[in-house]
Image (cartoon, rainbow, N blue to C red; front, side, top):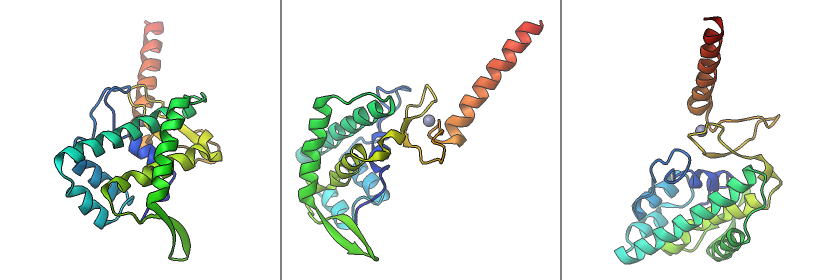
Length: 197
Ligand SMILES: [Zn+2]
């Protein structure tokens, strides 16, 4: 099974906060983390998760490094899109290579009355195919202009703005939206206080 949400690649890019705006943690520290993330996001099936968990150490490091390179490529491409900037040719080339490799690992299948791309290659290398497919599809889709970077200056998460008037500013209202509103409210209140004192 392959996740069909266009946001899959954005959610994947958001698994790394190291070196980003809040310089937080990287959630993928080993191949098992990657397997767990892909499984919980519905991107790969249980058999492929098991295959990933069985990979020997040296190969696991290589696979994880490749997944992280793809993640940075996706982040760069989508962050440029959010800033309405044209992407670097090197990032486009890197995604093209992964998308071509992904296509070889995927097949179109009909399930529950709908056609879907599914991972039919059971080799561990195929596990990141849904990410590459999601990124290539979003990059070439008219929805690309809906990609946003969270307005919280210590967040920087990428998300797809599917609101009707395309005015969503925060990755999540409950976390970043409220935090930024509270900050603006505090700034307003304190400047009013200063003026009145
Ligand atoms: Zn945010």
